[in-house]
Image (cartoon, rainbow, N blue to C red; front, side, top):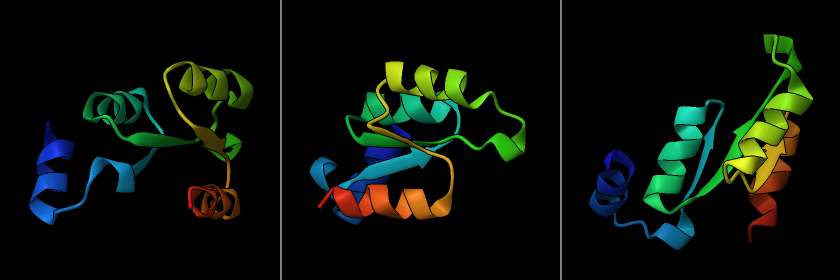
Length: 79
């Protein structure tokens, strides 16, 4: 609901919105809002990278990245 309100207020459409996050709550919020989600999973933060990446993909992440350069590439690939 909060994401939909923010998009409506800013005049941005669903198709032009992508959320980047690192938690299941972020992923679920994006899914509930109907927007694309890119997961940020970084082993430097003590995460079990492969397990976490699979968890995020299973929940709808279109991409899982582990550094900012990969994040930039993922965003640019969206067109």
